[in-house]
Length: 332
Image: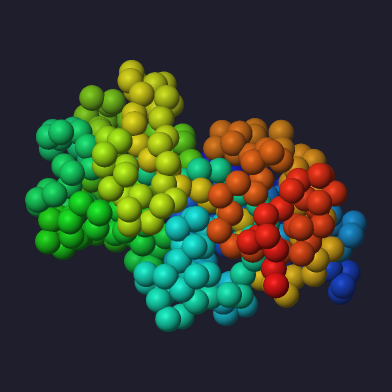
């Protein structure tokens, strides 16, 4: 929390330097709830942009949101300029699949891959049976699926559907953000929650530190279960949460993950996207110091797994770096 406070102060200072400049462009970056990874990384991206590019009249501001689902809508409606999205939501929205069937959202472009969104389906250990995702079948306890309309809720429902698990039928569904979910578990108001984010996730850290590692279980996915999810939408891969990631965590946790990426409206000028992207990759150590999840970011992985065509400004940057761009990522 202290890092976020410092970052917000830095942003305020940076923005003060461009007051009075009527030509300044102030871009808005949509993130997610404050207890996950999207928000601190989004604040870091906004801070970096404002500090490094304010002399060029470019600043940015990160806002919290319900996550990927709301972010897609805000991009579509022109309410934000940039947004952090789950790969699942980017693929579904751009291609008009599943919840976006018949209403493809083509008004977005990709900028860069960010980090992997790691699935944390967490329950109180006293309700553990197999220790895998199927423990949520006939769970019959309170379980937070994520805020209504969020990427958390959307991806959670997609994953659970692979195992015939139905919210409202298999558990009492709650719609809480990450930190409120953790607090509700600590207060014994619910017994589990869906909290996907890049580890370490602050809400999960809080649960392990407060309740104790033996009282909390992050449900695992066997190889067979991972393949079952991939049959629904083939974007998830194996992810190991290493022992020691969370307080008292003594063993690795075998879960799955999907990619996160930075999206942008096509109308944002190519030169601005180019400058922002260049600033990001010229200053990766800054992001690494804000959140460990960004350690996954590097130029050689920048376009891996992208599901939406690149913005022309991003194409220019990657071509300058000698990165070969596949045809499906070039906007037509």
